[in-house]
Length: 460
Ligand SMILES: [Zn+2]
Image (tube, rainbow, N blue to C red):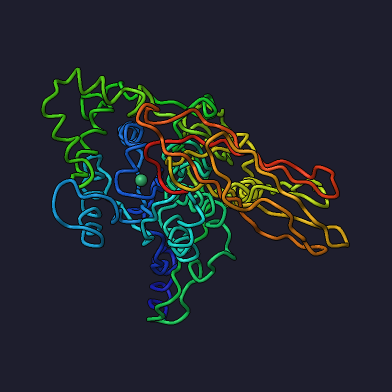
């Protein structure tokens, strides 16, 4: 008896007898945590940021890349495959391009290539809700500190609607992934064994979002974010960052075969001159600061102010539309969407052209989408007159429209653009089209759109 008691005392003095070891509980997979999540539209779009990514990876940052589509439309410069078959190849090329930089986390959202300048067409064709859900999942899985993506806006430039869609989705995911009520099935834990629907992720608030613009002119983006030299030498690769990025870009053979072949005929100095020119990477990569939830200077380093660990959800500051006239005309389509988007996502500072602008192919139709609004308590007649440059033909859309009380109606003006003559070069300077609206003989607004004619451009 005494001996037994003594034995118990001895054992109770040992820590392992008193407190059982904690049960094993699964937590988030650290192998998938990244510092930077790049969100773009097509394989090769990541090239807009690769000279910076090579630098960030040198500094120990972990990177993942998400593509909206597999880039299945467009020409194949390397072989016969087209369409969906080409998409299969482009996915592998994108993975190989990332692998050159040491990036092994690459995902595709499943959107379909949509060749237009209209972000709304791309969002519709990508199944906006489905791809947003996919992207929010990837933000919660990878828990990035920073998101890098295209600037959501419409500009004279390539202005690809798919690029814009990537920027829109990345911004939406930035604002939603930390919200436990957004796609709650992703952040719920299964209650029973083999319950296969709930994902057991945690909400994640990314700290900063930066944009790179898809516009020809860079002036409105100057000093809106940091700039990184592409000529500095990578510590790990012992060559310039542009060189590392070019080696990655060369994996996109179906998109760049003729370009890659042309490199073989150039010496290193010629190649450097070309890729550091304005039409390529220039001498530096510019970013535009979208949002920082952790302070830091606008032009400071991307990781300035970022400390390890989660931060709490920050809902965007929504700006009001202000007071509007009772009867009005407004530019609709992507332009009014982006005005609403900037207000909804706390991005009122985001650069955008004013008046709005677009580049279109000569000989095609310019369509000006309009909202006609009547918040008065009686029906109103709105008269639209269109002023277009000489040689541009207003096909339809002018004249009188009756709008019922408290209604907003959509309409459009169609203008046939002239062909660019042989002597006119490949483009003209932007010219203004103006739609003047009157109600009871009083002006109720003017809509202006600057239009640049080109030999080639994506459809509107
Ligand atoms: Zn692209």
